[in-house]
Length: 127
Image (cartoon, rainbow, N blue to C red; front, side):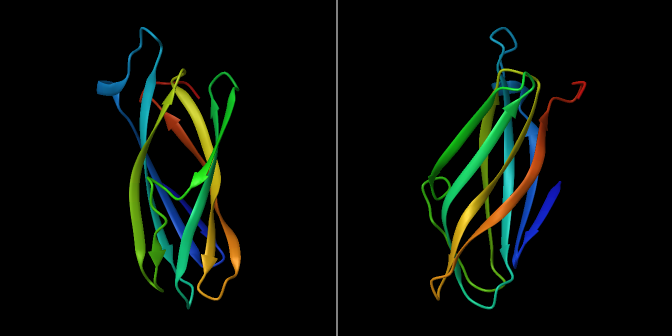
C-alpha cells in the first residue's frame, strides 16, 4: 500500500493484478487500484479533476486527464473519506502510475493532492 499526505489530504493506494481479466496472448495485463482519500482540512473540499501518468514496462507513457473520478466530483467534509476502485490495462506485466487530484476548498482555494508513484505488477514479474 502506498500512502501520500499532501497538505491535509491523505491518499492511500492498493493494487491488485487481475489474471481473470488479463489475456497473455495479446499481451494484456489488467490491474485494479483502490484509492482512499481522507480530508484532514478544517473545511470541506471537493475533488474536481484527476491527472494520471502511467508508464508501462517498456517505458511508454500515457497521460490521463479528466473531471472527477468515475464520473463523480465528491465533496469530503473535514475527517471524511472517499474510496473508489478503478482499473488499468497494460501491455506489460509491470508498470508505474503517479499523478494528482485537483481539489478546491469551500473558501475557493485550489490545490493539487499529489499521488506518489505506485507499482502495478504481476506476482512473478521481475521489476
